[in-house]
Length: 133
Image 1 (cartoon, rainbow, N blue to C red):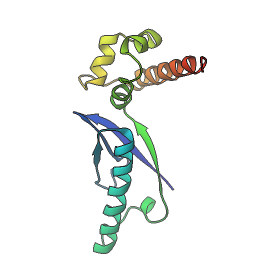
Image 2: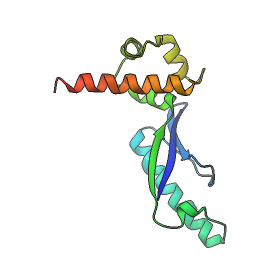
Image 3: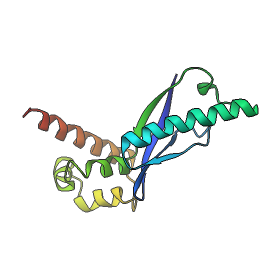
Image 4: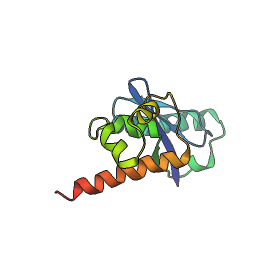
């Protein structure tokens, strides 16, 4: 069974937690690899503890489960800072660079349509960059 885990950016770290909210478990890490590894370890540890204590374990965790990661716009933008400039992303999406910075810094939260534009812009840039390889 797939379990959606949302990755966000909090000051200086990525943070991950199950999207459903059925289980209270959070992990942080300085990189995506680290936070993904840590949230899986934390969930397994937490679930084992719940079973040992006789607590009710959400049904998606009772059998074999697999994480499916999703990312907030803020996490996407912070991750991309090392690879793509906001200026390039602004050009590709038509969203002002300053607005992208507001989203990345958590000062504003994009609506779903804006999130889709950002994700599409990232994909478009990646596709164009892959053409030269």
